[in-house]
Structure formats: C-alpha cells, structure tokens
Image: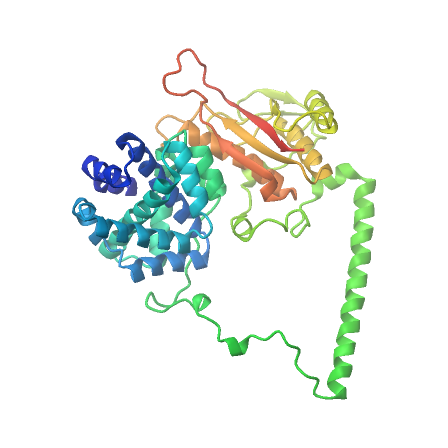
Length: 447
C-alpha cells in the first residue's frame, strides 16, 4: 500500500465530516482542502529530505513529538473532543513551522483559494493534516524500524505516486509554492543523514555557547603579529588584483566572440547563478547529458529519435527570435505574453530532446543573458505518456519542461529566473471536443 492509501484509510468520510463540523466549513470544501493539504505537506517533506539537516530534523520531529501511529489509530475518537482536537492542531502547526519554515502562510493562502474556505480554516486544517501525515510516517518508522535515511528513502519511493495523485487543479501552484520542481522532474534525491546514531542529536542543531562567538577583533600580541597581518593583507590584495585582471581579460574575449561564449560558457560560480537560494543550489544536480546535450549549430543533418531527418540541427528560428526581440524591446508591450516554442520537441514518450531543438533553446539563453531582469515560465503539455509505464501525461509534461529548465541553469541562468510547470494534456474533465496537446510554451513573466 502506498502512503496515500494509508492517508485515505485514516481520513475516512466520518473523520472528514467531523473535521468539517469543527471548522464550520462545508463538508465538500473541507474534504477538498484536506486532500490538497495532504499532498502539499508530503511535497514539503520530500523537499526537506533533500538536505542532510532536513533528514535529521524530520526524523527528530517524529521522535520528540511522539508521532508513532497512536493519533491516527482512532482519529475519529480524538475529534469528538474539541480540546484534544485543538491540541493536535497546535502541535501540527508547530511541527510545520519547524519543518517548513516561513511557508505556513503561503500554503494556507493557496489552500484557501483552491478549496474556497476561510484562511483561518486553512491554517487550522494545515495543523491537523500535518499531524496526520507525520503520525502515519511515524507509524511506518516504528513498524519497519526505519532509520533517518530509511525514512527519507521511503518518502522518495512514493514520488511517482505523489505526482500522479496531486489534483490537476492544484499541481502547478503546489509545485511553485513548495519549490519542488526538481523533485517532480526526477533530478533530486534524498540526502543522507550521516548521523552516528538515531539517539544522538545532530551536532548542527546544538546551540553554540555565547562565549565562543565574538565579533570583536582580538588584540595584537605584539609588533611581530602586526607585521604578519600587514604581510597577509598585502598578499590578499595582490591575489585579488591578479584575479581581477584575468576576469577582465576573459570578459573582453567573450564579448569579442559572443557566439563562442554562448556555446561554451557554463560558469560554476557566475554572478547570475550565485543568487539562487541555498535549497535551490543543493538540488542542482547535473543534467542528464543524454537528454540535454547541446548540439553544435555547425552540424548539417541528422536523424531524430522519431526517425525523421532534420536539416541543420541547432539552427536558429528567425521568426521566433525576431518576434521575441521585438516584444522585449517595446516598453509599451505588457509583461505576460506567451510564445510557442515550436522548435523544441521531444522523442515520443521520452525526455530526450530532439537535436533540432537546440537552436531555439540557445536563442532563449542569449535573450536571458542579455536581459538580467528577464524571467520566464515554461508551460509544458504532453499526450504521449507510455501506456503501462505508470507515468501520467502530467508527470511527463513536467519532467520535460524541467529538462529544458536545467539546460538554462547549466548555461548560467539563475535558477530563480526560470519557472516550469507541467499541465498534462491541457484537457480538463468534462471538456468535449478539445484535443490533447503536446507542446511547450514560454511565458514572459518579467521583461
């Protein structure tokens, strides 16, 4: 049984009805909110376990707070007592504040809008749902005798089930709010706790005695020490001067040959990439070179994975580039325009970008490098998920746009300037006659 099956066993219609009564919200909206929160909390915990500190903190939270399955054994009985229910909600919200810091308000706002309930109800339901999710996880830890690493691995084992279970109407907002783009794309993995024992508190969380932290300079021990400091300072200034000279020379060389800089520049510590937050950098694993290897524009012909011959793979798309440049250079045009990346395609049912796609990708990279304030959002659609693979069109569309996003990040574009969402086929339930789509659009969020 998946974890989501376990959540469904706990959150029965009777339990959901009691929760709705407690919150004084309609039963249907409460059910929608709780289901959305289950996926949101789970997604947040997945992201947390991509760092060593996060793995240790989640495991420690389960141990210290007594989440071992006892709460969800008979949740219906707990909900009959308003005082007990309030305690569960309070403890759950405290856990969320520790595990997903500074995210409680944004999650509540998202769920309030998604389910149509009051914001106060969304915050209360977040605490209750978090407690349920943590208790189910704690029961697994207890029954399977999982270590911190085992818990993180078991969460990632549910990644595909998680992607397929998230309601389509919530999926884009959830991914954006929680920041799990690379997890959904399949390029992030659980970190290892490196803890010597589950009973030992990680050293990273131990408070540092105030006496060991000082912002005052230590007094000089004598003239020898002072002279030594002057020599060290002089050496550092010299090194900085030499480094600055080489950086200047390199920038002159790249400006003289912009095409060469575009095809070869993959800065490890560029000023554009360095601004990404710590979590984003910790998730920046190398892109799969088989799916996103740059193709030289000098190649004159090739055969794609679909067996269709293409001429000059990597060639530029003059129409796309001209239209995009004209739009970006016109200050009157508002932000938010969407352009179709018609030149970017994938082999059927795969994450392998066709060779002919590289030209348009390179054009977009050049535009982003020329405009430091420009931000974009990739919107992916797919209708060719392999039958019987367990991968939905929604998951496939999201993975594809993240392959594209990873190319831009590898080329030196700040991770935070590129958003990516997968929209599946683009056909919603109840829409008759609408054709499934297979394409990628780029929306200009900021010029």
